[in-house]
Length: 114
View 1 (cartoon, rainbow, N blue to C red):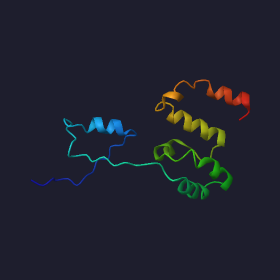
View 2 (cartoon, rainbow, N blue to C red):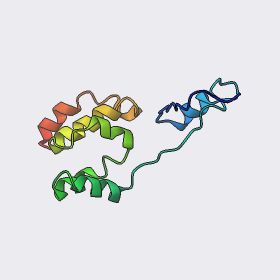
View 3 (cartoon, helix red, strand yellow):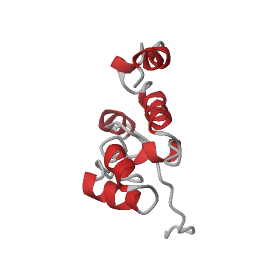
View 4 (cartoon, rainbow, N blue to C red):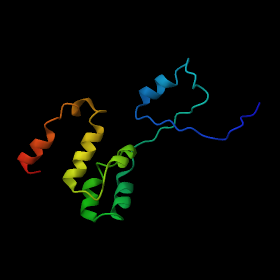
């Protein structure tokens, strides 16, 4: 029997471990879903894309921060550098144990003048 629909479902996850658990031997998704690894974007590619949108100096500073494709959705590249860093940190802090305790980060930036 052929499938009636040609629709595709894309499941997105940022962790290989989670993918392995979801697609374990007893998973109902096994055989239906195929994991595809999406790595970090090369810094030169980020730089080239950003340089079309912002000044090259800003693009050079942002390129190392914006290599993870899923972060791009949560960042406004037109914002100030400080605001972009805040956006990146607040986006990734729940996925990085070391950043989960950075509640006072914003106030410490003001004190240091960074």
